[in-house]
Image (cartoon, rainbow, N blue to C red):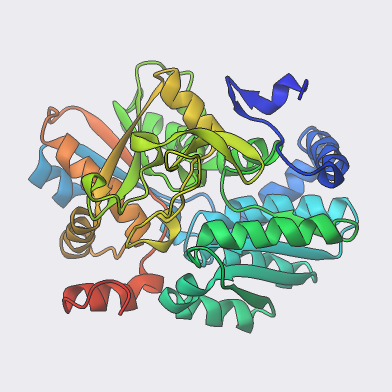
Length: 396
């Protein structure tokens, strides 16, 4: 493909069927027009403030900081309407869908937070909504399925492959190829064919813009480290966006090591993945020796993805960002730590970032600072947490 802007180094692109190329070109043109239109931006920011509840606090976690020996700040995306960062992107994409004259939206979801956010936006803007969700994730995230249905969405279980996010995404792309005339596909993560990784970054960059300003006002200067969990990579690219050019700030993405990278049951595409093509993009993917995409594993439904957004792959290769892995057990320990020391129940996804923050903090000085993106709250995970604490394994 000759369209160079679709790539981040060797990653990205538009690896889709011919029938979707025109659709992507239309989305790209509409998006570029919208983000340079002051009226569109005014409307977007109005809904972020008055509906989503932005800006979210940058909270100094005093007890954690005291225990681990460095200043730990939490960017509280869990306080957004619907309980996670996903709504930032949905409001942007659904306003774009309306601008393009679409009447229906579809989405894929893993942990269900993007599905809930899409169903919320569809209800708000009076659009028909269908959400594709892996059968295994439906089992893990019953509360979010109920929320989507209450909001008027149709939740379609996907019974193929691993019955998780990858398969839900496959199904959503197949449907979109047939229905693009009146349907807009709201991708929830920083993945997929161009312009989706760029759109998701644009609509999530409010996270880092706010955090950078809040930190400067409260503390002065820049933080030493900015950290977020990485599945496909939407909260992390939003958390990194405004700091990428600030070379003094370490950017750290935290993947799911599942039962341990050495066990093969993990979701660490950056640690062990190889470049390949999935869901319309070239990026790091978990693959076998024949190039078949392997199953990802994580106790967290939202990190259970065998690839990563193309800009993250580029940030890794260029050395601008570091990517590390945290196991299920480490994440669950960090989750309980945050509950007990700060009175915050985080999503299991976000707990992966917290776990690495605790490890890193012990190597830092008391004057240094870490900002962790607390991407979502943990209500959706109470069944998984209960099973885990009861020693039942995370699925039973």
